[in-house]
Image (cartoon, rainbow, N blue to C red; front, side):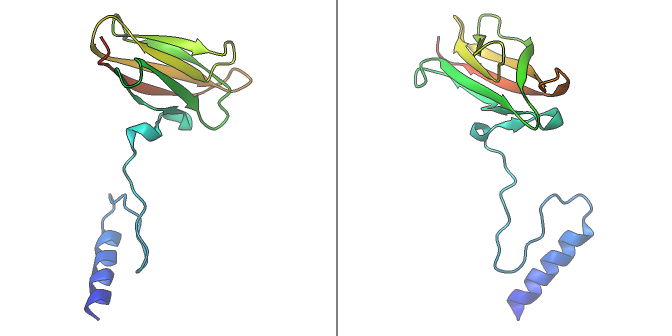
Length: 138
């Protein structure tokens, strides 16, 4: 009886909160994880996803990581903006229909970002996504 009352109280409390993003679950179920692992990708505008979106370049990966841009209707992508300077390099794989990018370490250690624009087969922009790059392979 006490367990049922606690579950009912938790549901009532969650229902009163208009800013709660945690879904309600029935007794015996578990709530899905709300955290997004950096290794599982990040979603930008228009449902465009970069996987991974937190790129760490180090001696374990030989200073190179492949980033895949995907999402609803995405056919190809472009780098809109990047702050690599001497920290990293971004190269298209399988040009001209590019959804994969090779990020490699530069001569200096440091942090950078890159924003990708994603397009459908008709060259209409679907959305964009931003990745974070940390070069430790220098």
